Amino acid sequence: MTQDLDVRLLGVDELTSPADRARLLAPQLKALGDPNRLHLVLLLAEGPATVRELTDASGMGQTLVSHHLAPLREEGLVAVTPRGRSNVYALCCEALAGPVKTLATLAALTPEGADACCR
Image (tube, rainbow, N blue to C red; front, top):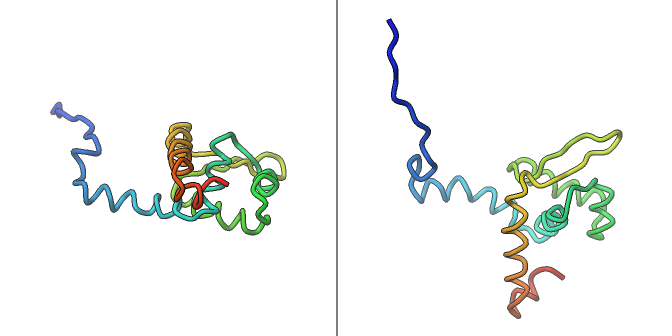
């Protein structure tokens, strides 16, 4: 005996309350809240890069770049792909690049934002 079930996927709005969604989003925003990590995300918004390329572009040391990439990977914001003896880092999806660039631009348009971001 088989039974057909009326099953549909629920959207995030149906699954969680705003408070639940905030709790789900907070760790990702926390990972983006560090200026060094946000700098790396802005660099990756321009395209994939190796740690060496990120080190050269950011002026940070290799250890510091690797240290800051770890929480971005853990939160699923950055993906890593092995390439020979190096790893290539990229944003999890192209959809993340636009909002991050927009926020950085908006922040740079205000005196407070210019002092805090995007130098």
